[in-house]
Length: 265
Image (spheres, rainbow, N blue to C red):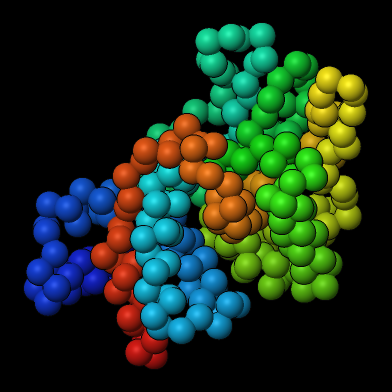
């Protein structure tokens, strides 16, 4: 929190940013959630070898993701929501509620408990993780779906070859309070399964088949790898999320993180 406060003070004094806007959009964000988003943004710069000019475009996008994630889950990477199909009014039941806390840390035990709970239900649509993604986003044959499948496979391959790198890439070290040993075991388990739902094709429709093993696999990746949510949110229209109108969080702070990174900070 102290470093972020210093960044905000710099914004106020040097950049002339509005103190009301800064305090309203960033001061209430949990430290570990902010650090997770920052690490994903910096990781994107490194992996894509972005120039400073291109990198300066990221805070606008990542601050939107941050706002949406906080409204979707409160920063809880293990959050699961079950949407019952028979409810025509769009009401849904959540396995666990969340409230804003100073820091919200998930656990591997919560992930497994939530998976066991949703597998006991029938006739449902289930969303998983920090931005509430769903298995059908990787099930069909459109370009977005193929992109999601490629990212899922990429994370699984990395978990097999270098579990510690996968844990960092996913941001699990920042959002889970488990030991590294527990996280390695969880990543090993999720690297060996199939997260893609098969499709049932008829003359009238094409729909995913809710196979429990594949649903569980997707759920584990979605919860243990919150970093993959950025990839999925980047290719799917914001309109797909109920939180599409969420306000951006920490724009100025993230902008200063970019400057600091390129200045060798």
